[in-house]
Length: 400
Picture 1 (cartoon, rainbow, N blue to C red):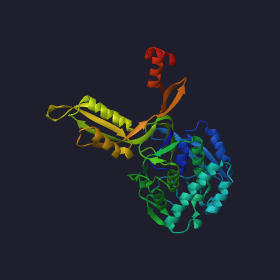
Picture 2: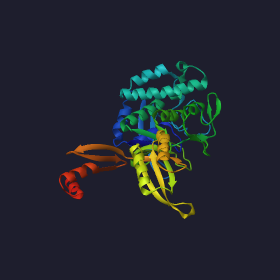
Picture 3: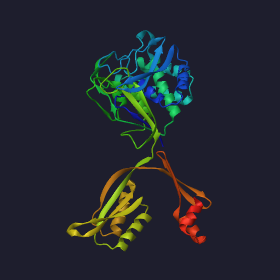
Picture 4: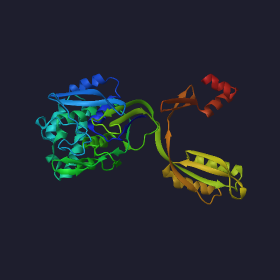
């Protein structure tokens, strides 16, 4: 499974996400050519090398009418009319307040795929809904300040375009560091995260810290909410590429967002049911195991143990789907002498499995995490060995 992992230990903003994702693309020049051909008036986009705490990454830079962005990222108090603080202000003479209708017209004229255009509008719709909830006005009356400015539009479009090119099957992100302190906006001084960002981050695991400033901006929060499948720790991943999107300010911690692209196996939950047995014969336990496997258990196994009064015993373990827990508990009670069953829910990472038939023999194939394995089905191989009056080893060698 192609998985993208976003490390948001220093928050998230549009330019940092764009920079990190751009580093995962082999042909960055072509991507920048596409972005500079969007048709946005006066907009020029570039990717500049940057270094934070000894780590080299990319700063995604946007200029409007030749004016370079001025960094406000992580500033504890700043003019929050330019709301996503990792992305920068170009001066208010080039900004205007845009309605959703005006913004839609701009997006529809961009030279990108229909999917990217729709993704951009969906991200803006999330921001508009958050602003609507914060200010208590209908979405139709929301006027974007910097969020509707050309530089922010370029950041969001870049992320949507890069996500289309990367096409991950799954996007996972770490819990989001939002920073601490306050930001100044048109309505006064407000706590971090800013109200719109806080609303967008509903349902997303976040945390603060000692760094003063706004680490997760409304734009960054909206992009995470739109693209991220789940939030949590880094999954088991065979990494193929890593990218660093840099902010402008310097901190004791590297001011960057890290993106990791790779292959992972499937991950799901299983229930482990277990009990200790000291008054059943080997045949009786074997019969119980066969009954449990016939009932659809994912796995059944035993472990020799020492029990109280120094009696030797057997631990019976059954793996099943959580939804089948009651059914297998009933089967264990029916086929064993146990008086109690312990249960534990566990996470497991598995390879993708499929089956192919080659010359009448079924082959089991497993793939994922950079691994490819295949082997013939034992029962089919054994049947062929009997038919040919050959050993299993000889038959296997001829088939491999």
